[in-house]
Image 1 (cartoon, rainbow, N blue to C red):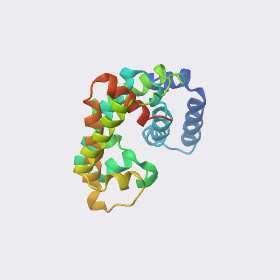
Image 2: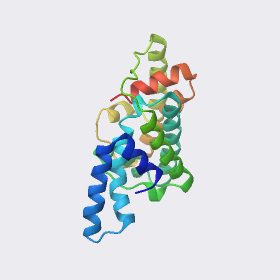
Image 3: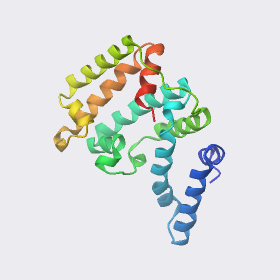
Amino acid sequence: MSLPLYASLKTNDPDTFNEIVSIFDAKLKDGANLNAITGLTMPLIQTKIYSRIGHADDDTLLGFVDLLIDELQVLNKKKPLLCMQSLFPERFGQTAIAPFLPEAILAQEMGIMIDIMETYDPRRSIPELTEEQESLFTIAALKASNVYANLFGFLEQSEIPEADYEDACAGVLTMYDTIRALPREHAVPILRSMFAQ
């Protein structure tokens, strides 16, 4: 538990840190090994940390989206279901995706999680988008729907066949790519509003 991620978690979110320690203690007593426990607790840690991304600083927010794009591209190529599970675990089932990602991305993810915790500020406001930014977001969404026609319905919780998973993930990637390519003064508020909690 001396890894930088856990040290940052202990400092910045002691409640989650204590919850993780309790899980480790219980599972170790049951005979589980550290790798198995880490695999069990990491989705919980990620969920807690990523819920804060809308209130992280600008550089961290953009770095998170860059990482997300890289991860989803890898997962969609390996197995589209993994992309769906990464994006929407409550709909497609939570699974450990770390075994499917290269070490470089995993190391980057650890750094981004620490950055989120250390730059998180709930007083950082979620901006109201300007008319121009609303239009830019709409353009990004339309580009994404050109990749996967049923994207809007899918994002609104409609069921899709497994054969569509790859195109649905590609549609989401197109939306993030398009927004990320915008000038910073537009990309940041649009992304911040998307990740608002």
